[in-house]
Length: 256
Image 1 (cartoon, one colour):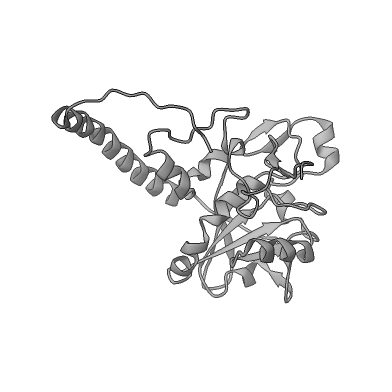
Image 2 (cartoon, one colour; image 1 turned 135 degrees about the vertical axis):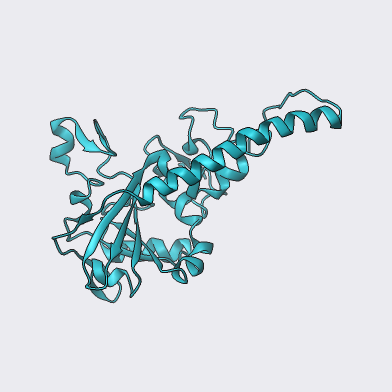
């Protein structure tokens, strides 16, 4: 728990209201800009998928088309969880924790939400059940999907230097990055890729951040990484003595 002090001016109610109304103008500007950006996002052109993808689910193989479950819109969470890991990515876990309450609303508004990770489905199911998550989560362990959508990279690619990830060439140490991709299915069953976003582009999905931004201490991420790894933990590990490394991986403590 953060305990640093907060020092701020203390004023009369009338002066506070004057400054609050001035800030409200800026907040409304941000709201209108968000609306405008959402309109531009929906106006982006689409890319038709000519390749079929098959994933492993608890009930057996499923196709990308199957994941729509009859709906026309599909949001894929690119989850950083590779084969052999004991714990899921903390940042991805923090994000999907916010999705649980939205599932019923999305599914009744023509949208299916599905997470995809490289780990085998048996390992995914262990984590999904441990964390109590209800969303659909399938494995791309035997699929090119993650690599085709540039959210996973081979060790050879990483060793060779820069890779193209999150719309830029960069050096990565992790085999996976976090993100979302959106797809549309037409009445003939054709699938189109409409949108993807990575990193801080997904922050508006994090309701915890939106609430923290309204508090005096804000996000209070003061080091060493100056991001959520400074304080966020897997929701079943907050009472443990472990830490989160810069790559977003939970590390259990050796202390009893």
